[in-house]
Amino acid sequence: MKWDRTSVPEQRRLQNEKLHRYLTEVIAPFSPYYKRVFREHKIDPRQIKTVADLRHLPFTSKADLLPTSEQPEKFREFIITPDISVLQHRPRVVAEALFRGRRAVERRIEMEYRPIFLTATTGRSSSPVAFAYTDYDMHNLRTAGARLIQTFGATTKMRGVNLFPYAPHLAFWQVVFAGLEFGMLLVSSGGGKVMGTDGNINLIEKVKPEALIGIPTFVYHVIREAHAQGRQWPQVSKIVLGGEKSPQGIRRRMVLLLQEMGAGDVRVCGTYGFTEARMAWGECPPPPGEWSGYHLFPDLGIFEVIDPETGEVQGDGEPGELVYTPLNARGTVVVRYRTGDCVAGGVTWEPCPHCGRTVPRIVGSISRASNTKELQLGKLKGTLVNFDTLQHILDDATEVGEWQLEIRKAHDDPHDVDELILHLAPTNGADVEQLKEKIRTRFQTDVEITPNRIEVHSLDDMLKRIKLETSLKEVRVLDARPSE
Ligand SMILES: [Zn+2]
Image (cartoon, rainbow, N blue to C red):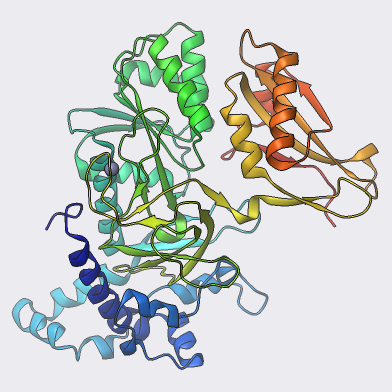
């Protein structure tokens, strides 16, 4: 059956069936963590028969995975660990042993459950958490990868250059395995830290890829430098962005530069993924200025959308926090995982208006609850500021080349009020005074604060400030306040 053209009732039926089987045959008997949680909450997994029944299971959040002083290796509890005495009594395993022999079955079980690969969370605020994959999960990672490339509308004749930073992070490896499974030439540069900007540009010159894949700011940086050097990249027709949000402003700027470098119709596709899901989802190529939503794989996992305050499940298309449950995973498994990502348009089961696929899609912009910071701007009380909104304003302004927001204490005095300073490098030919005024007005209308100062820098100085080439994650918001 095709993964992306099945009718909605059939997809829902399959999800219910798979969920029930997965919880009763894998999670309840073999997950040390959920075995305990189900016992403590008196949950009988046999009673969970549909996706709607998921609401009877407690959520799992990032905090549940972090090491504690009693359990320094807490993440191990989440690794599916088979009980051989249970497995060898299952009729299917008994039959398999009769036909294929005991050795072959033992080997198959080992391949299914033994971790052979890891990726880890990036851990900007806390220590990284490792997620293990077994051979079984590698198959899922490859399947997700091939489906991603299909979603982007690429063909095996195309070539791609993967500019994601080389690290044990999902994004880099999702792309590597996508190319292997789909069967297209995909070269991984390792990003700016491994090859430098010129190294990446030279690699692209040699490979002549149709697709450029990477973190929005780094892909944009490489295109901008190549443009400044007068390179011609007429064959580029797709840009695939991941690892962070990709607002329309930065998409538009990439396309304009590439068109000046000889390219024709360039389509930009965003992706969404996270370490805990051990896969990513993507957009089909939307017309310029539009989003098509992240096309999900309903046979591999379930997304619920909840009210982040009450935890109540929202209806189709309603906004809320994304909660993920896999349907067919081994290795490290989290169930009803709260992502902390809030999506404006929720999850819709309407067929995609662009490609006609019938899979559910995550639609609307995604913001992270943790990107809201409390600033002490006046003497009296703190102000909550959503830095996602600020980022959207800055990325959308065509005259802004690079930017960074810095929060610091006035007069460097830890007891004084907070100050918000905007550092920016304007694009060539921008009217700096007009730009400053425009940003002040947008900040005031959208978040009701204005920066205390706007400092203008050269592009080179800004690139050093945000550590684009030297760090795995660029520094967009610099909180320079002394920690409590
Ligand atoms: Zn589509």
